[in-house]
Image 1 (cartoon, helix red, strand yellow):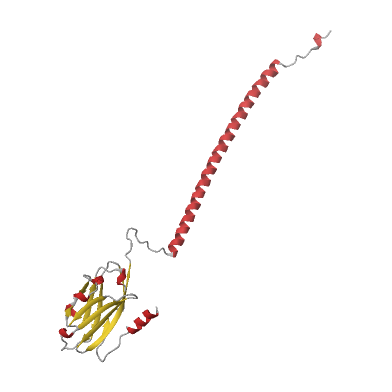
Image 2: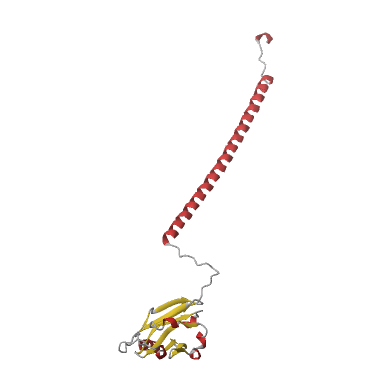
Amino acid sequence: MVCWILLLISLTPFTWGTFVVNVTQSSYQAEENHDITLDWTFTTTAHMSLSAVYIFCQLLTEDKGPTVFHLHEGVEVPESQDKQFSGRVQFDKDVLREGRVRLHVSRLRTEDSGVYWCDVKTDDGTNYNSCHVNVTAARDWSEPEREPERPDAAGWRWIVLICGLGLTAAAAAAAGLTVCYCWFKKTQTGKKDIILESRRRNGTNYISGSTSEEPVRSTESDQP
């Protein structure tokens, strides 16, 4: 870790006279298999000759430093490029005279993460600058990414759920009361019919019994 910190400190650009190298973006965040464009600018003059331009770009990590791009006297040197970047780095030579070092890196890998250091030398001087690139693993698109639920949405969801449960319980209670009432009504009606039937039968028997069993009273004429 200490070596890494010292390395970053050592990469802090210094100005040699009036020749300066800058980065258009100090940090890049990209995803695996995507493309990025690294861009440096440097001081130019009207009499600058492309044949006198030297560019050396390198990826610096904790355990290695592969060469990303090498330009010698205005001519690319592909054999100097590390196999990690073989066929994946394209140099935009059209903007070199404008004082720009533009590298297109395609099909990014997670191992491409690190500090990209670029040293530029012309007849007017030499200097360097660096930028940081972080490449993350590609996401699994088989499952759609869910938007984080807002707290207010979650609160309303609970309210709706509670109200729904309350209405369901009320409906169930009403249905139960209706069934009980109907059963009670039917029971009372049955009992009433039985009582009426019993009274009707008892009344008939009493009348017939009193007619047949009424005692015969004796009269005075029948006495001796």
